[in-house]
Length: 346
Image (cartoon, rainbow, N blue to C red; front, top):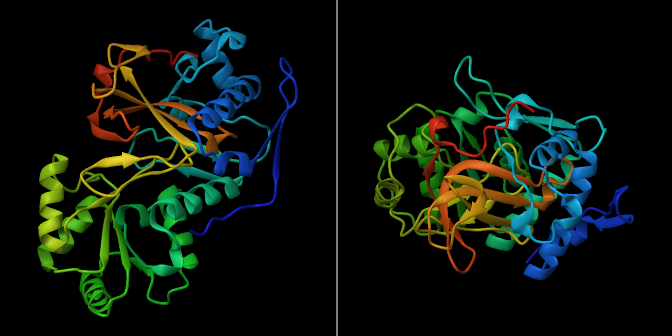
């Protein structure tokens, strides 16, 4: 399995603690839960000292940093802060700013990325962990809503994966469905391994034009109807996609503008994290407590690759975690349903 590394070191200085040295290799080669927790606590202390927004949030909660000894004791920043604050853990100038999608007039999230190589290393290693060598695949992308705006972290990732595939057939498709149908059919019939990454509504549009019987292709949906179609429950959606593409399962990617890591589902809507990410599920009635495995609650994400921003994010997704640390996404909070996160006055 091919891994990608960059030869640089993150020097983390924490006034209340001894000097902490964390390398990119420390983050991307985590091999145990104990190792993950050790590094996560170091990152928490670093971000408390160097991220004013996060420090103010922790202080508002009266968190005693020196008493935080476990993942469950770490405060998780509500994801809405990325719409109203610059969430950064250093003073470096951003190399790229990723923005979330939204309708006209909607306030969107802004993720100021001061070291984009961390993002590149995260998605490259993440892909390798789940799918192996990128050069084994032709990567086709059907992401019209993302291509039609600036600042998409998904487009940044997929564009790089297309280049890394070293396959001349790899590429983006916008609304040219006929060309994609011909390309996808020919590649699959030739025995070529293919990954088709598509926004949900565009994949549905494609199978309405043509019914496939694919043998060598992975269909990966990125979620979201983007206002183009009525939202569907996952089981109904994947049943339609499986039938339309002639495949036995639909893969999914779980990522967001505010993070640098991605989780992947190889089918049935069950996601697994790469070794530098972890999921906790908070009580929907009390954001500072957690529910047991198998119970539904709010998804909290630890993403250690996000060291220069905030690695501890309370999302607006509802889901549940399984005993083996895999997880499922079951829906989203309505704004009126979010409790315990009304701290946006900071």
